[in-house]
Image 1: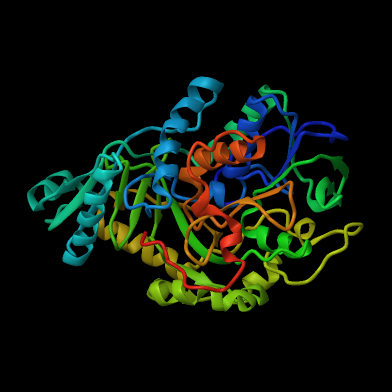
Image 2: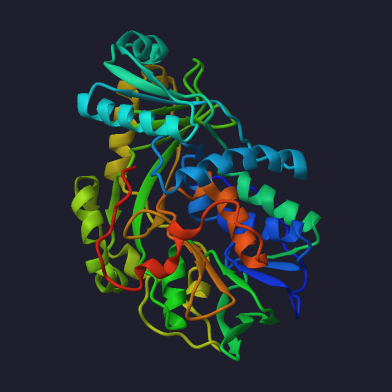
Amino acid sequence: MPAPLVHVETSPALPERADAVIIGGGIVGVFAAYYLARRGLAVALIEKGRIGAEQSSRNWGWCRQQNRDARELPMATLSLDLWERFAADSGETTGFSRCGLFYLSNDEAELAGWARWGEFAKTAGVTTFMLDSRQATERGAATGRSWKGGVFSPTDGIASPADAAPAVARAILKQGGSVHQMCAVRGVETSGGRLSAVITERGTIRTPLAILAAGAWASSFCHQIGAALPIASIRASALALSPSAEPLPPALHTAAVSITRRGDGGHTLAISGRGRVDPTLQQLRFAPHFLPMFAKRWRSLLPGGFEGLRAGHETVGRWRLDEPTPMEHNRILDPAPDRATVSLTYARALELLPALKQSRITAAWASYIDSTPDGVPAIGEFAALPGLIVAAGFSGHGFGIGPGAGHLIADLATGAVPIIDPASYSPDRFARLRATKVAEF
């Protein structure tokens, strides 16, 4: 794996029974398992590859409220508090800090959009500051240029993608749960119209409850049980630089490039929204659902190749439960980074921050970002299969809101009063093709 990731030990034996089985060991799956375990449930976390090895370790690490869609903002605000509380409650380190997020721009329309969001943020109790030209240029002194304006959100922050999901997995073990890696879930069994068991490559676990937090694999898994979950994956590329001797902002965004400081003093670079569309039959199947999203964001998307077909995560075929599945043939989605994007990202970063000329590229990687037609996650129980809660389609936002999503899932699973209103996240909103309000950010 080109993206750094901390190793987690696997529990020795698969349980015969569990109160809840979590399918997928990304940031959402581990937090769902953690909050369920804290409520006294016997949980088994099942991961076909390694904990956090796909999108959860390949993102920027941003934990933000700034510019969140109104439907996601309550979860983003909650998650920031939960990131802090997790460290205190578990004794584990995720690298989270409220370092503040810093945005710069010379585009009047972009600045106007940020200002409108700032007015909305005030009504939601979010602290964010619009910066005038002098303030933006002063705070952005590392760029060595003048700016028309910017935004600073002091209560937002970052966590470490390499450390976060593994840290939560260790906390699950401390709570008495089990964590199973290199073990694919092939399907489910039902009894009386409800979920009754989860079938893995190593055996069957009897359970009344399963959480499907399978990221880019979630839609093809749903297809096996006759449920339609419109998801399309975008291949996004990023790169890592060696540490820089000069101090730079911990998290800086511009339209050209975004930069995040890592715990080792190096930096992760990416271009916001830019990605390759690797066509698959699943994308063709759900294409009508994604037309509004494509119309809004096509300028950031580039045509891809056959990477998606080879990966197998968006198959529309059916697999048998007694034979190896595509998930066993491809344990970890590790698509090739787009070399043109990597080169462009690096060039833009050097132009933006001259101090980075002292650094070198240490790694480059890509990931498949699972996106819904409206850019808002799908979280909730499928009406067609009681006992199965889906949590997928986080559209590149899942890392930052992972704790809030996990807490909400635990609420829904145990019948507790939801910590936030789950209505906007219902997966059944995609049951019929209809007008879609695409997330602004």
